[in-house]
Image (cartoon, rainbow, N blue to C red):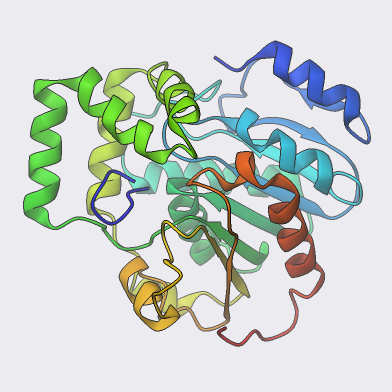
Length: 289
């Protein structure tokens, strides 16, 4: 995702370290099925499906998943062109949505809690609109459903990427970090994504707009935001309008402090608690904060 004015190789060692502390084994697939983007699962109970953001992959969800797996079955998926998931060509938001729909339909006969981070939230929203009976609640973590740049700003960014791919990508992902050290790690990981795949995703995220369609979301929706996306001095009415969330009928907003764009890395316990509480109350109507 892009933060207002900026564009908002899985580590086996990390997986093994986190698996030791997990409440049950992680079923981590060696290869991604061609018909699905599911790459692993852990825990047992009602299903929560986690979708990462642009230039990321499923491993970023592991700290949160360890917590949620105490009383849920947590399913990891990866977006096309990321991690183990194959890229689809020609690429569109529709193609990404279809991939996520297949994962939802294959992973649980019962309605699920669908969680998306950043651009993953855009794809999750698109899937929830198409599968309202299969998604009982939707959680959007640092996600925008409306373009966060003007057309002119988008064209400038795309030109900068074409002129200096590495330098521009570095500037974007360095800004996503909680601090400079994390920013460097995020940039290094995003750099592992195939350039053509990344470029196709960026073009889609700069233009996709689900603001109007979001009015048709039937399930409760939780927007989890950091202070970078919902500034402490900013009213929720203004922030929700800017992010394209204002028309969602059953919406609750939560701001988590002391974190950057990657809330799941900076505040995994707080995020897991927010998701768990929301999932437990998903059949109620939420009022805006």
